[in-house]
Length: 161
Figure 1 (cartoon, rainbow, N blue to C red):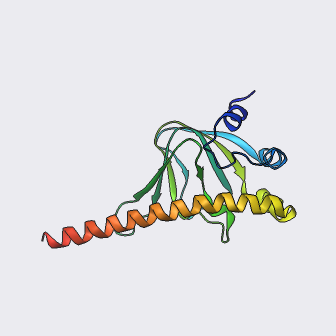
Figure 2 (cartoon, one colour):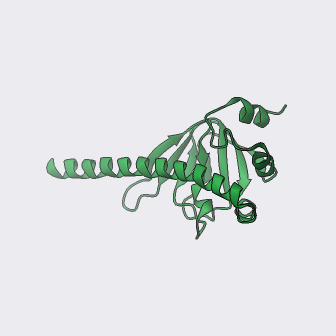
């Protein structure tokens, strides 16, 4: 048993937990393992969303680009979390950047092949869409909280002048 298979079988926190075995088996044929060193970027905002990732070792911080300020951290992802949600909707472009907090192991999935599979097998497509929608909602909430905190910082710093 390899590391990924052991993770998928034993860990209940990941997005694919309890997925039908035949769906998971097909999805796994579209994947490959990758390693990222601490501090390296896995994805960058504005790049084509050609892959999405399942984290199985390490932490990743999600950042959104700053316009007149540095990038802002939105959320930290860890074991079992999914990264690169922009693969699922056009224009298939990453909206956030993701940087390895420590050495990271991920399982990367071919986005185009996954979308094609979803169109061929509606049951699989619906199941995957529902799983990713939950992740998107959590990411949206984390972004909203970060934006409120930034607005409060701006408001507070404006009052101290």
